[in-house]
Length: 175
Length: 113
Image (cartoon, rainbow over all chains, first blue to last red):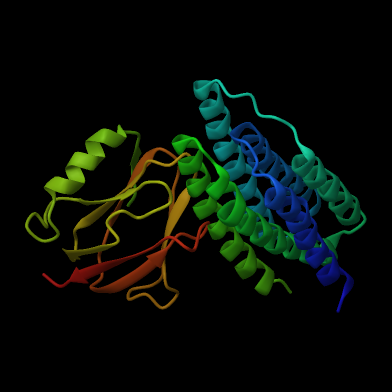
């Protein structure tokens, strides 16, 4: 197994490890769910910004631009919703674990360039969206109490599932 | 030939209900995109008719044919909160998806006049 594949699996495992034990013991509250979902979006926005600063591959750059715009759009919707509901997103151990994992991945990606970067970035995008989709579907949506928050998570899930398919297509066509 | 214009989502909802696939085939047929779904996923029209893509989402989508589509492939960019018109000039069955979110799918059947 090559290093980038191991790294991608590590990211997936990290996300699931961050989410599952806490949820098994105690369901997250809506303010915590809002923070986790928003943080997951910010992480992918930062990864997209790194890709746009590094990659010269047109398909990778188009994918990254899509991630930037889509996650910003959904996070803006999330901010509008929490404002409307009077909810203050609450930082929590899951969000902190996600950020720590993303920082480690960013350090790894910043050491790469050219086709090696493109491959590692796209593999991570596949793995990251797969992990986020599982967490949103199996943990965040079932735990959400507010109907509007649940609906926004469901819309987000459709979008993330689309991103996963798009990432798989781009990754498969890399030279 | 495409054209874009921003409109209100409520208007589109009523317009979709009012149009039946072939009863008003000379009118543009709307495909409203809402929450990452092509809400009229299977429509039928005639050669020369226009499909009106109404993107009510906050994110961009595309309507992308298969590579082997009759008359050549197409991939129409649908920016957020816009309406884009696309004239269908070739008969055939066109399966399409969104390039950015390939889990969004639909079909247009274009009949000869």
